[in-house]
Image (cartoon, rainbow over all chains, first blue to last red; front, side):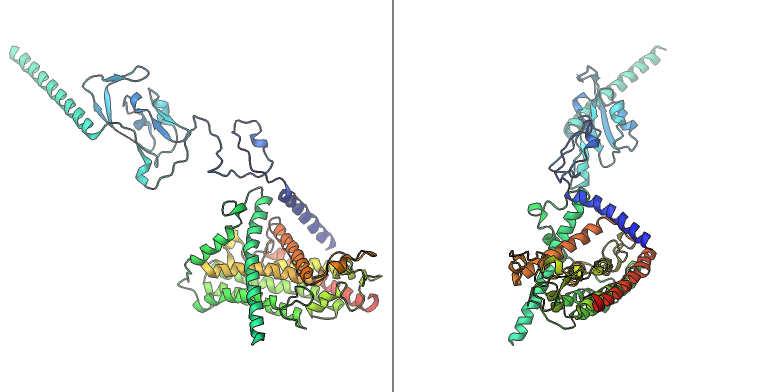
Amino acid sequence: MFNKVAHGFKTAWKGLALTIRHLFASNAKRKITPVSNDNYFKNLEGTNTIQYPKQHLPVPEVGRYQLEVEIDDCIVCDLCAKICPVDCIDIESIKATEAFGQTSDGSPKRIYAAKFDIDMAKCMYCGLCTIVCPTECIIMTNQYDRTVFELKDLTYEFSDMTPEDAAEKRMLLDKQIAERQAAKLAAMNKKEGEA
Amino acid sequence: MNFYIKYLIIAVGLFAFSGFFALFGVYAERKVSAFIQDRLGPTETGKFGLLQTIADVIKLLIKESIIPAAADKLLFMLAPAIIFIAVYMGFAAIPWAPGIAPSNLNLGLYYIFAILSVETLGILMAGWGSNNKYSILGAMRSAAQIISYEIPAGFAIIAVIMIAQTMNLQTISAQQGILSSEKASFLGIWDVSHQGGILAWNIFRAPHLIIAFVIYFIASLAESNRAPFDIPEAESELVAGFHTEFTGMRFAFVFLAEYSMMFLVSMVAVILFLGAWNTPLPNIGSVHLADWTTGAAWGIFWTVLKVLALVGVQMWIRWTLPRLRVDQLMNLCWKVLTPLAFACMLVSGIWRLWVM
């Protein structure tokens, strides 16, 4: 019994000595260093808490957080919406009657994006959309602190077209299709007449 | 009339003190645990988070007091009051300084132990009244634990009473210092009636009382349901044990009782073993340190200092040692502490008869 008691006290003391060392150890606030720092995992001095709103852990500029679309560079190819595993990208496209501009890498733009919505509440941050994008206009940024009060605010709208604009373009497209249809019909009629 | 006003003021003062202690006890506990775990603890509310617990109390005050539909309403509502009052009444017999005690009972020690046992009843009422499996399990464990640990604690105390030959806490306190009317001797051989200080404390007057002190301290941890004997509350298995269903002020009272209990059992330990309100500084030759640091104000200072040190040790232990299993708990109580406490009692008798 006495051995057991002695052992109990010895082990308890070992634990108590460990905790009292931590109790009186430096309680300096944590210095914020990026993960890329060589000492990041050796940094055991002082307290370990990151006081979040006051201190930020630096993240790489190309971190995989919020999605961002540079709509001027978008050719509305719809690849991102197709590859998205959770279908969080919703694109409504209108064909232009002719090439109406160029992206910064020189690709001709032929389609208007009447709607380019990304529902970040659904997004699983896989980053597939950024990989398939041919013009690299959809990217992930290092912004991760995004809180909203309404769920609908998590649907980011990137299209810069007003509904009137879209209606006009739609009308032009319909007109062009109608004209082509008419031309086609006329050509067919002419062919039949010749025959 | 004056009599009643005086006692009312004392009662309110003690209540205010236990409330104040619970507030800053919780804050200290959170800070100690945080530093032990290399965290920061509360930092936002007030300077260094000092107002955190006050904010918590305000939150508890404005919360709804929910009574579960299936609860036994009378027991459920009475339980927190009984738990707290049992502990609070214990303060009535505790001396703070020479001549300063709310009530100078000649059976003070007996009274404290009797009234503290009522807490078990409150815990059982809380557990049964909640009509919840976790609560009743916690309450049963708590009752079993408190009743078991009262035995080694009781025998450790009897060992002191046999040395002191009184149950009056004020007399026990006075015996351990320069104000003693009888001879005090260090380790039974060296007369230190005029030196006083740490040499005349009970644990040095009769060295086997050091063991009794350790036994009492361990048992007092169990009686106040503190880790490593917190199986009645065992967060990881019983949610929160007997106070699972309590909200708002009722929960606050259970908490208040826990912290008051910590203070009270530490205070009893200080009075019985660590020289009560006596100074730890002895008279050395012409330097009368003990005489200079004895008095009403000094008495309160030394009492509070010693008690806070013991409370600190309780917190330190809580954040270090893991919780004991039920069988380990009973093993420790019945097979280790109780025989040792018996041995201490025996040695006390021999010491009183042949050494003192």
